Length: 308
Image (tube, rainbow, N blue to C red; front, top):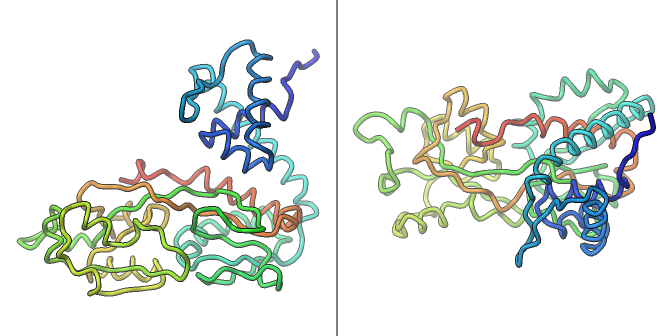
């Protein structure tokens, strides 16, 4: 039986646009122009004989047919990528140096690394734990794992994990006569802050939250401050105050009851976690298998809805 398949480029264009929600974002991922993505998607719609997107004045929206088509294509492309990575794994050898945020390494990556080592014993991982961007041109790292906007001049960036932010505290602060039950109680709470050397996501700072709840008088300068999210979350577990937790980093603590989300409020973070590096690095077998594995782990990471 002869397989009749639409053009591969058209399928890639549709899958990326549908997954990312825009032709522009798909164009950035595929390294083409938005017009090229639009043209490819139109060609696929003509081939199939039905529309996959509604074209709106401001953006696009999947049709019922597009929503039904997307999961199958995403599964297929992921399967192809993993099959290719598995084939390349026979050549994946050597030392892979990864620049990574300490909090992401400790709270998300380390618990999963055993799986990678079992699959790819020929790759030796070296981690540089830092919140400062690696100087790839000087050989400081092959790739980096960063939290940011995805705009890294001269580098390729692969979106890994989206993020949400919400207030968290030790269960000890949610019981008794001084329990924190509503936003007004934050007037007497100790705040735990995070400060970073790169441009911060505004929602990991306390000021926007307090202003949104008419609490401008709360002192956002006092309290404990850390340049590492892991330390901030440990301080919150120890009952030293209220912190702003990122879902990816505190998921295990929330599930175990070590931390409790407060006030039933979650904000979608402006930033996400990215795999970043020179374009040439992504062609190396040792990098290709690691990035593919990272994306597989990201696909199996529960969303915030599953932990809250």
